Image 1 (cartoon, rainbow, N blue to C red):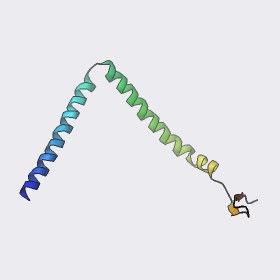
Image 2: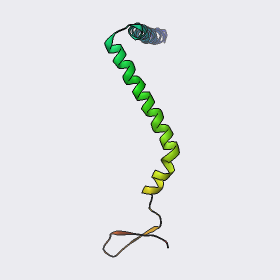
Image 3: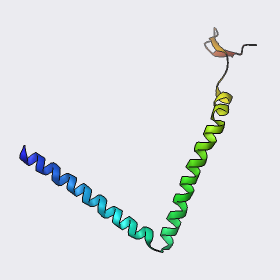
Image 4: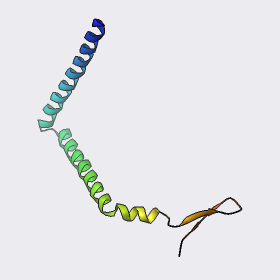
Length: 89
């Protein structure tokens, strides 16, 4: 059982070390004035802006879109096996 605990600790320690090294390299690259970093920042900003815009657009127009595609009325089956939607008047 002691071997298993030391292996788990070593495994978690390796994961933590790799995460910290990745983060430190990422921060070094982020602070560098490099063209690829600038392109990454622009694309990341565009992605975040798009997701926020989609979120707010869905808050405003989500019910309208759902109502457009939600058929009102009940459905009945005909003798041929097809479904016919009936709109209540």
